[in-house]
Image (cartoon, rainbow, N blue to C red; front, side, top):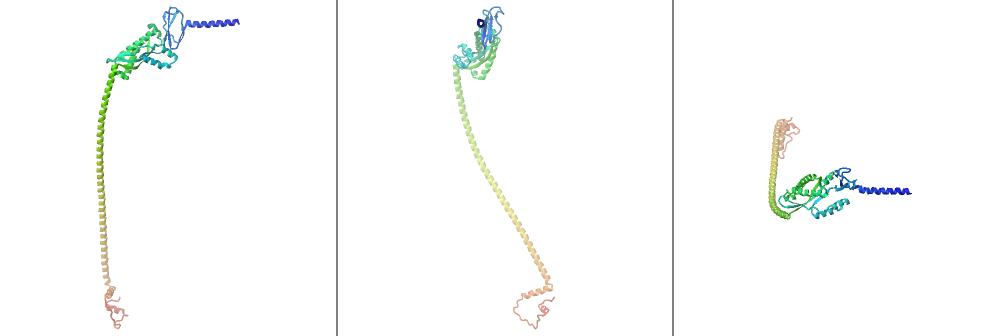
Length: 376
């Protein structure tokens, strides 16, 4: 039992010793931080700043031999704006994680105001500028060796940003600040120049943001007056154009009405022409019909006359032929008897008395001789 208590005590002392040793002999660097170690004596290495960046984790921290400086390795922000804007920014980012809020809260509330410059035409312009940057990875120890503190390298960033912004944007006319494309080009130019300058101090520029622009009140009044004057000019132009268009509309309306009348008259004339042409065609058809009818009637009359003439001719010819045949027939004994018979028929002697003593009616031949006929 005593042995178990002894072992437990030894283990406890060992744990306590290790904990104490870890706190006195090691240093912990958190995520988002970079440590720079300085050796105070030329023992276990060269004296001075160690040419190495130490990232998150546990590192040697020997008393009297090692001293440490911790730098924020995340992207830093420097705002050239009003205090009110900075307070608003803190409200906007209040939803960040506790670690992010720690770094934000650690930043001083004060800071550089807006970047103020003179435009090319002499007016004051104030810019709200936000700069994102960080110490180049692997070169934090160089920044510490050359500058000695965080405040100094942040001061270099502030000074260079203001200088570059004034140099680049100071070449612009005041009215050009209203043009987003000109601002974009100048921002890209300023980013290139500032990145080159900061790189010489082991600082990496991430981005420059031009957030807002404020102008000299006198210039703003001038711009307002100009805009009002321009609006008056445009209004007068619009009115003149409206009158011009109104006149044009009236002219077009009058021309349209005239064209409608002309079209109407042309339509009436065309209708009359078509009617006259139709009447002419109808009259021509009637005339042609009458002519055709007359021709047909004349042809019919001619044909009738021809038929009648032919009939008359045939009749005459038949009559002549009958007379000829009759004459021929009369020259025969039968013809003579016929003539005698007809003569007798034509005689109207009334009642006569014939003596049968002198005339024997049974003697036909004798009777015929008496009346001038011949017996066959």
